[in-house]
Amino acid sequence: MAPRDHTVTVITRVGCHLCETAEQTVARLAAELGFAWTTLDVDADDARRHEYSDRVPVILVDGKEHGFWRVEERRFRKALKK
Image (cartoon, rainbow, N blue to C red; front, side, top):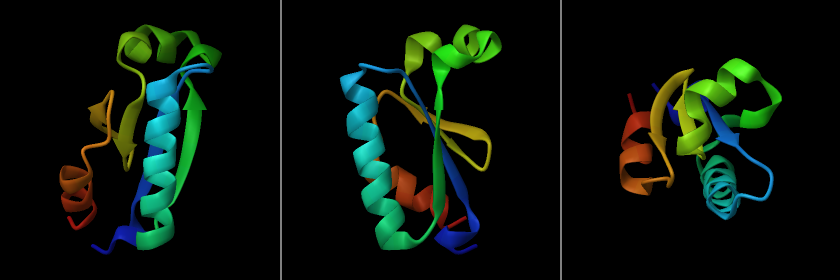
């Protein structure tokens, strides 16, 4: 699968510096590799807040949790090749 065939979601929180860093990294990689990505506010949904609140930012690849707190770029790139 090519990177552009994947969808990435970053679950974030307003005022979270790790979230801002993760968003910048994902935006840079999306521009380079051509995949679509979005953000979701962890605090906008009770179920999401319950599931992810203590781990933001959380990175989802194709709806499945890939990682949290930081984007491990090497591992992330590998996931997008699958």
